[in-house]
Image (cartoon, rainbow, N blue to C red; front, top):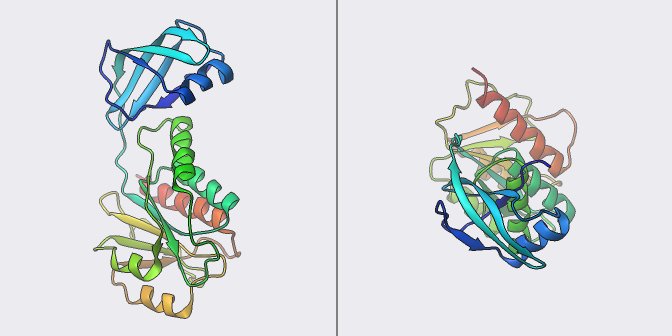
Length: 236
């Protein structure tokens, strides 16, 4: 069995025990079918710990935290600003953006977005599960939805990478570095309105770039754009 990793936001200390919540207990007992003595890893922003199951009975599971693993946590300076889309596509975006290592996710309401809200409880559950699966420690923070013009005002000097369907320019290593605080902007499937495009064009810290010659769905555009940025940042 592969290592089971679960997110545990509360403080963890070596050689202490903890009674797991019902969701984690159900998952371990009924889905993973673990036994007493099995090891489970728990993580949060402070690190990752190996634990041992010391008590297990139906919906009651108690673990003992044994020791903290030494892990290198890569620096994340990449945020995703994504115009809201329908439920299935949005959930796919949340999952894939987490797997690809974004720090924050900013849902945007633009002139042409049909969806105006997001279920934050469900969204946070998705990014936590994706963090567990992708061997990371910190789930991305998901902001409350923000109107596009307010988003532009909130950038505060961050470098905006605009995945622009009208651009013919490709992103290069000259454009970004690990030291930059990067916000990647993906527009709605109907593109931004002329007024919104004008707002973006006036930003001095904006880089417009192309991700494809084709018109992509929002979830495909997110995966493609983040992968491009990661590839460039990881070049030596």
